[in-house]
Length: 105
Image 1: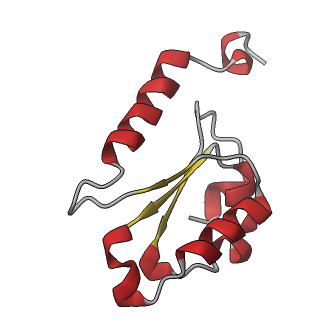
Image 2 (image 1 turned 90 degrees about the horizontal axis):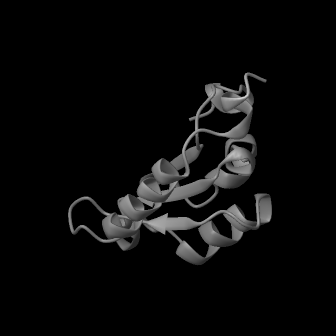
Image 3 (image 1 turned 30 degrees about the vertical axis):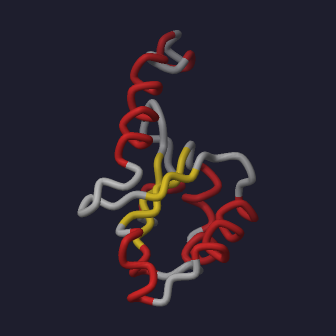
């Protein structure tokens, strides 16, 4: 999660995946990746109670680092949030290449 956060990789969009098992403090610990992310996906959301994940603190921490990214809460097991995640990916795909990449800059 941390290594490529400081580098422009030429991606169309940057997404940070954060598992509830990692804890709600990760946005503060790894602020660079959250600050440069176009979206944040909180995964394994169905395990939040079992691992003591504080959803409110996690959202507060994400928005402290970057106020505007969409935050998608998802679970592959229950399919919670997957339609939202796929719709977000589709919107990015429909948008096409970023201007910088298209003009060779």
